[in-house]
Length: 145
Image (cartoon, rainbow, N blue to C red; front, side, top):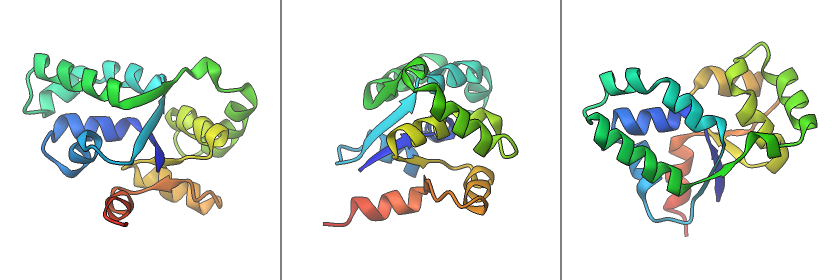
């Protein structure tokens, strides 16, 4: 299974490095992670806040971020065709504009978005878009044969 990794997944893994989300990201499994290049721009923008909340020091955080960069296939935002951004814009404008990159990548690839953002998930579902996957759903899929 391939999933698009939302920024809040990385935030969670950095703030709770022994939690379920971090374990899933670090596990050797048949899961593959994709994300728009915007993901790590957003992580860098919030690094000071993450550092305040995380038990990891800056050096450890940088090492974790590097490991996540290696585990996630990054799709350059410029490589996603404009038409998918226009679709995504119309979808997320009244939910959360910061998610436009993730929804555009979903429209382009049709992979579900792994997110902890219930406002995004519920907002998309309300509009008829069942394009998110929860951590619980991912955990269940890991244990299926």
